[in-house]
Picture (spheres, rainbow over the protein chains, first blue to last red):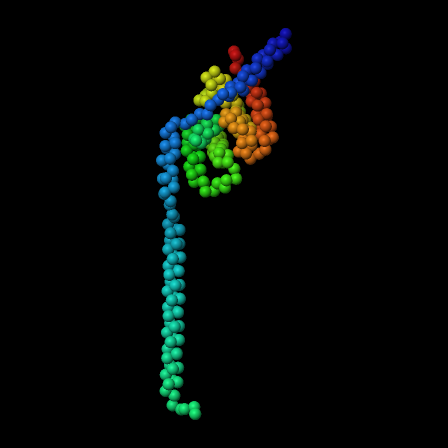
Length: 105
Length: 159
């Protein structure tokens, strides 16, 4: 007798479980409030436009720029000096050959 | 277009409209930031669903880490969530279903939510989960068996 009652109860439980499992039939998508989309759009540009550059990064950039400028000035001066010396050498050689005392003949 | 897909998926995991809205905002900001890194290997919707699922699961992980939630989820069921899209005649039963969906393992839960709440085709579910069609079918089968067992265990007397 008790077995029969248990079986009936089990069947009832199973039937209920199946009904619960079927409760999603015909479900529709839940939509958020219309203002959510506006909120998201309002957040987009601000998120993108504010970029924070760390101060240490900036100081490294400044040091690198100074180094490049110094090296350039040094190289420019060195080139200028070499050109001047070469020009002086050429002038001296020309003067010497023009005012030669002894004729080779 | 993707607004309700993202929100509905988040709501199915979190059962809380406010948190689902936050997740929706977060998902769209992530899409905006990472749009350049999207390689186009999958559909845009697949990519968006993946981001949504990851964010929702991370949020659930955060709850679990909260010291206030000492009671293990599997030992108690919160039969209070009413999905706004459920038909009126199924509202009461669906509360029990959402309570037990919460106790499924992640993979079974994702397969079930995407297939039966989002109503996505099985192949798309497989793509989102980065697995095969057969695996999804097997996950759904196991999810249904587990759900049925758990529902029988919480059968409300007097029904």
